[in-house]
Image (cartoon, rainbow, N blue to C red; front, side, top):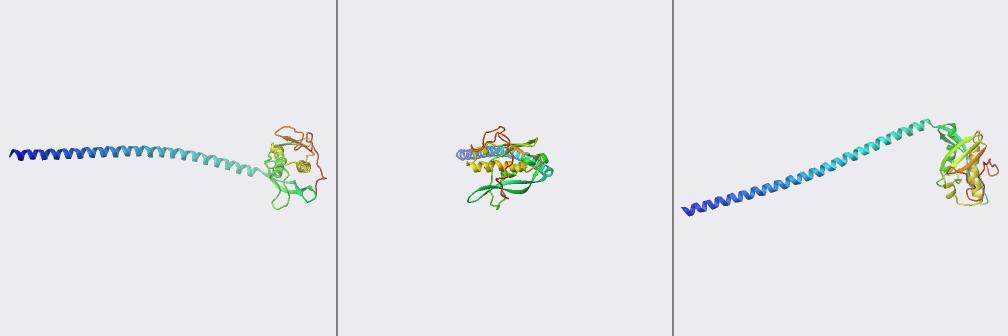
Amino acid sequence: MQDKNGQGKNAQGKNVMVTTVAIVAMIIALVSIVAYMAKTNARISRELQALRKERQELTRRVDRLEGRLKEVEKESLSLIPAQVTLYFARVTATDTFLEPVKETTRARGSADVPRAALEALAKGPPPGSGLEPTLPPGTKILGVTVKDGTAVADFSREIRTQFPGGSRAEEILVYSVVNTLTDLPGIKRVQFLVEGKKVETIGGHMGIMEPLTRNERLVRR
């Protein structure tokens, strides 16, 4: 009887131990699951927070773009059409000369027409016209003011740094600007500036320190 009781107690002890081990294993598993879920939730929370910030930034950008679009649309509506005559280069086997092209551009008002004309000149001739641009690539129009018949045209440095060279090319460049501006009412002379300052020459062949009047000798119509 005692052996049987001892065996019974041993069996019960083993069962209790197995149960305890199982419970401990379950607890460890649950703790691991909870820790994993907590870690996962923290990661998801960080990602959600980052996505919310990104969405807020995108919303701000869209708002800024929409605001700029409205400004551009408003500016576009305020622009007036202006017909100007632009002088581009015609290159032949024996000579290079200026050829006038009438074009309709848009300006913010009558005072802005000279600048709009030079900006159109800087863009180059119409496609398929067979004409060549006169201003070097990258040249920007920094400003044009008119006073007492003299237009003061301010260009970016590219008008000099990107000029390819040549006395005839320089003459064509200078008078494409002068003839384009003096074709407008109230302008008789043109003073060149580069980055806001007078310069002696564009490429070393022609002086531009003083205002210049138009040159019909270079024009072929």
